[in-house]
Length: 276
Image 1 (cartoon, rainbow, N blue to C red):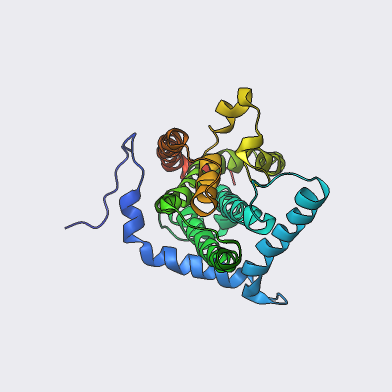
Image 2: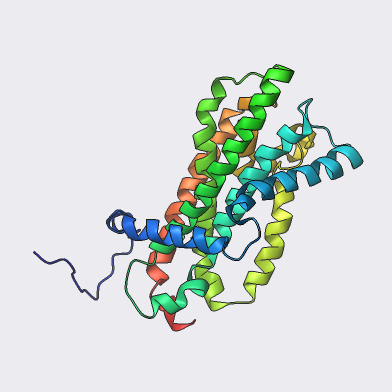
């Protein structure tokens, strides 16, 4: 029985999911490599996973809560900002890692063959590990406020994995498409980094959805990050109200984006190597 089949005909619809299961060991090794390399020659090493979101949260508390006086729906500012920052970091890290697949790994792709999809999958896995650590820190802080402020977790906590999958899927699908485009037009990476910074304010990271004017709410909820963040806030804080329709729409749109991204990536993964 043949292990490999060489054929000039390429199926139009091929996403390569089966290849990922065959190379799961390589995905884990690449993820471990990125985790170790990311904290080499640093002062506090892996503690940055915890320190970075906490410092960002404290900065937002001072700027947006104390100075700008932006409301937090009667939730302690530290708790209010932390879930949004964790999910935004998860999305942006996964997106950046995925969209630079060809730029950062061209030296490997030119030397050895393996499914190129392994690299973006390992990037999302690496970001997922960091996100889990940060989310556990949030749970610990929430436990303290749960005792002192009487906060109660509701049944919407069952949707928390859905919110995390929305962030991962959105970053993965968009990153696959962008990786093909930026491999050919390198200057687009600078533009996209600027757009990504602005995009943070299109998601309820530092404010609540209740602050958005009614005439813009339909557009606001089309952003998959909006129901992802607000669902987690509802699960832990009970506000704002959980809207299942935007959540379902986001699940469908992110699933479609992932499929499109996989198809585009698989059809161009060989051609792209001729341009970098």
